[in-house]
Image 1: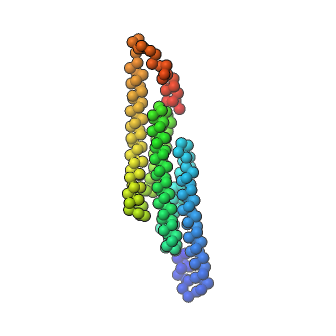
Image 2 (image 1 turned 90 degrees about the vertical axis):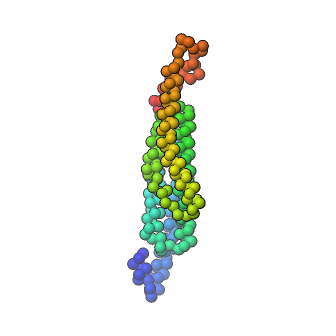
Image 3 (image 1 turned 60 degrees about the horizontal axis):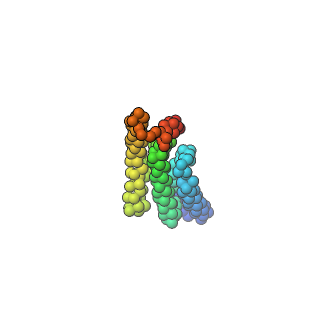
Length: 203
């Protein structure tokens, strides 16, 4: 693009080709931004495919590369549109990640410890893949602050979830250890049999 730009002065044909390339580039970048946004909407809350997250990261990187290397050849309206879609995409990713965090909390509360542990590992992988995408965003100061709050909440939640999982496990173990059938007025295992807990731990 830069070489064509240098040659276009005084050459109507080259200038026409250059304008066509700029229009084509604008359309391609808008399409890339919209497709990336749509990929976020297809990410599941309960069953998360890490391959889709990796593909999403690749597309976010492509948008970043385009902004670094060819954004100067894109018209201002396209720039604003892409910036807006990029911001909305990242905001949607954070909302999605918070939903995944919520499923972990639900799993812990239901004593599905194996499921909770696996999801915590998954969230850590997702934050490693996508986390650096939310460090600097320059679209709107108020929105940026809200996004930062969401990002901090996600990162803090992972450590909190691990601690919550550990606390619940210790509480459950203590509960069963303290059961004394000799003095119990009723069988405490009827409503909450240990085999159900073991089954959840094995998952």
